[in-house]
Length: 529
Image (cartoon, rainbow, N blue to C red; front, side, top):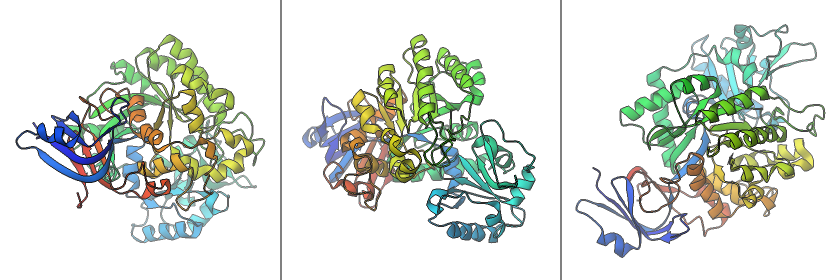
């Protein structure tokens, strides 16, 4: 059994309405044994306890990320980072990786955003200039578009005669030739499927690196939206005693029948690794204009986006999953996609109440649909940083409809549970950046101004922190064990180097993490602590 961990001289924001503040915590046997003042904590100390004087540091419940991609993130840390301000800089980074890679080897990367490069999708021709003997696949920042060179197109057999797959698009020039831009997973799959996957041991090593980085940023729990390869790695890390972060693991829709056949249910597992919901998709993303909309985009009136899955298949999947005790977590960004998903939940929740069904992203909601999620008990799993990242393209592509985008305040006022995350590696995994975005609706440089973008949707610091603590726990059905600092709950704590409840909100994103505690053990600790 681990020795007690005693934290004293702290400003604890417990997120527990019955005891909002404390100056000390005691964790015994992995769970919180005391919440109160320093005197009471010292009185409860047992021999061998580790007593840490936090010097007045800010303490919050262990921060969670309700939507990230562990496989994608872990692998991205070894890939080319092409999230650059210019196309030329992205090409220079690809060229540098080409110089280090034997001819014929794949070059993989992620992060490009054509909206900051002038709005035009990048082409194979530009990549060919720096990579003529290496196949290249670069995922967009959104994850809903790919940029490839001519060699990759040839290896995948994509030509002018290749039809667009259902739920995807091969972008073509005026002559009908593929340009090198591929929209949505169905179009990217022929290329992606050619890229060698890392070995099991390599993936475990990559996950170890990803966990360490998450802990440095204060995270104690993540909801992983990726597939079975990383799930195998996570299970083996657990068996070896190396899984330092708590993981709620989603099941891709493609494996629903297998999950039901072996009797898996949401919540199965332990407090370190458990089954979450079944992950499904209805549409694409706002950046490449593949979000499924009720009306066309301002910049393309005839384009209402791409429904990436037949809605009948999604409906069937939800009803089947819910009947088997599996919740659903459905990617929906456009207002048409969100409405369709809410309609499905209205039917399924009446038949199978009590499950924590979720809308992932819920980025653009028609005003008529904003109250419905609370009435149905549907969780809004959202990523505040998307609001500040996408504010300009939201106004560009949506016009006045952007008033219904990233509507945190409206949903919260209706009573919807908000579960916050990052969608990492689409955005940075740092929860403090997400809290800053939710509170200020501004970027780090202060744009668009003091009132923020669509500032009526701003949250208080407490509300934003609750989204990354209690909200993330509630979405996983583990709020009895996580999300607040209260007696009997798991001893997960994040220690911050500034009091984010009192400082200038614009300083929140730069707040250092001094310590991250999972089950009463420090998994990250700054030298100063």
